[in-house]
Image (cartoon, rainbow, N blue to C red; front, side):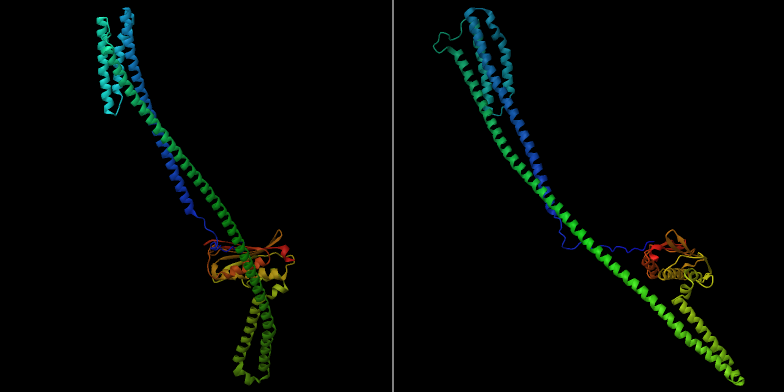
Length: 464
């Protein structure tokens, strides 16, 4: 496991960061939707109005056509009868003979027209009576051979009926034409209103689109500004974290070196001062026991023997404490022999775990700081095995792999989860820091119930 410093979680964005105005964008989108819907409804209304106006114009144009056709049919019938009366040639009666059926169809078309004015309906009905009357007069003229009222100054009844038919047709035609003109005027007015409405709606939609573009542009710029501020804030925080991590690493290095120096000082004082005192006390006790008379020493022999044993235990304890504080084998015989003496017996912990060592016969020159760091790592790893692992087999290995010096401690104990954040894991942190001081890496491979393997890799480039 590479114990590089982890980046601290970033705090929330500072309050000075601008906030995008989502409400304005929503309002603009809603207004655009409403105006677009209004524009669609207006276009549909304009289409329906135009279609209705065109259908109305077509119906009234058909009415004009029927009125003109009726008048022409009447005039053709009268001309046909006059030609026959003048020439007595029956060929002239063809328009008259065929015209009655056509007149009936034209009158039926006029009656079928859906006029809303009851007065116009009555006019059409009266016109049909006049047509029947005129047709009867033409039939009488053919039978008599002379048009009725031909000798009268005003033309007689036939001319009056024809004039009345013409006047009523012209009246209906004028009314229809007025309706056509009114429909056209209304259509033009609606076209003008629709054009104005389209202009207003179109301009409004374009204005809202422009506002939308401006809002989106400003929000894009706002996002860019926020991203820039966040980047600068992240860089500042990362720089501060790196600076503080460096400070903590320097402090840890200083404390580690200070502790080793203090332990070395204590080891020297215990070896020089306390060792000398204990040795002198042992020598004095032995001298006193030899100088006293035998009859005086006999009652005190057990006391003298206990005192000498206590002094021997104190000297042994002093040697053990000195060896723990500053192992003499490390400076006198080197790293390999110091590791070989960890521990003096083969048992590891209360569960009787056996320690197996795989150590090289010789090593390249290893600086004292590197040798001390690797020794402390092995010492701490074996201490953890004794306290927690409950292992039955432990292996300590030191070897050279490429351009690295590798120290490994492996056990078959209960193991643990390296990713779990637990308290009192300072031993692991201390090992990791010692490896970091040598620009190496510490790998921890473990799992609950599967043992633990701790491996320290130290490059040779950092040993010189």
